[in-house]
Image (cartoon, rainbow, N blue to C red):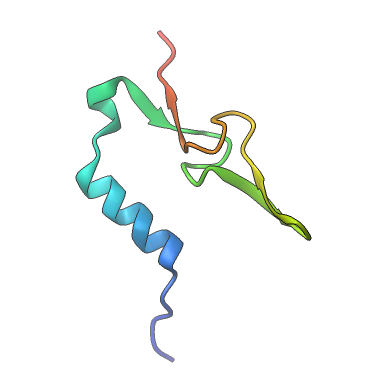
Length: 61
């Protein structure tokens, strides 16, 4: 079997290459691992409550 294409993972890889969260004192959200969403519901995806769907949070000092 060949490799399957997952657009969500590919986009995240591209963001990792072009955006440096460290530069802005941010880190990927530990709750959603940077996806911005949690689980799929019948209505769609549940937005992450930790990062508000952004996927990044300010680093705690």
